[in-house]
Image (cartoon, rainbow, N blue to C red; front, top):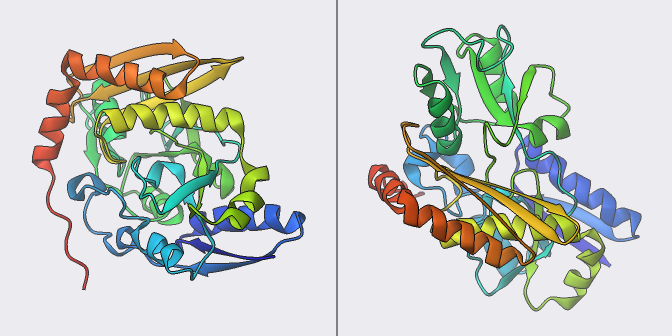
Length: 310
């Protein structure tokens, strides 16, 4: 059986696609990878939080999937909107890499070690809000580009430090500037961070069955819980919401955070239970009732329309 994988063209996206391709080849499938350029890859001069990035990194890939040009797509799960079209399904979620964020710097050993007013780069409103809660004095600036580009900007002195997902750094073997892995209590990760999602057409049983061996039940339970929270709060992947679920036996523990963009208001909730959607929805309801809705309303009021693509 021949399988065609659709992927973004970034170094990390291609690592992910090749990783899944290798697993499929081990099971005797013939695999090829098709690179697809997405809206999110084309808009590089605007902070993601300012354009509302829901679906920005998947739209063109899903079009190729719908048209039958590819059989499956490999995504970073955190880039995938919580509401998928009925045409598509998440056929597999493989075992998760480290979900935490990493503090990267040439000269400084930790967030605490940064001098007053230091310039820190991040493309994420979630990270910015939690950073400002820890260190209101920091000068947080937007940072776009692939992992190599971001690390190069750090090394050239544009930033005193940058915050990146540990998973991507480990996958690309670029951990040399990681000075501090941030605990989830300090920097709550994005929903689904560190996990991959393999998307297929809903009715394509041959492909879905072929991918089933890649699915990890613990990772699926954790990420479904995190994404349920995000969906119940009405959040895309560029809102100041963090969610981290762990599984002990049959019990999920979800720790969730929503923070105002200036970091002055930080709301936290922890919920336990055995049903991923119930746990996520419960944590969302508590955060919204405590002021989360007002924070989200303020974030959406600051967003600008996404530029039309030519």
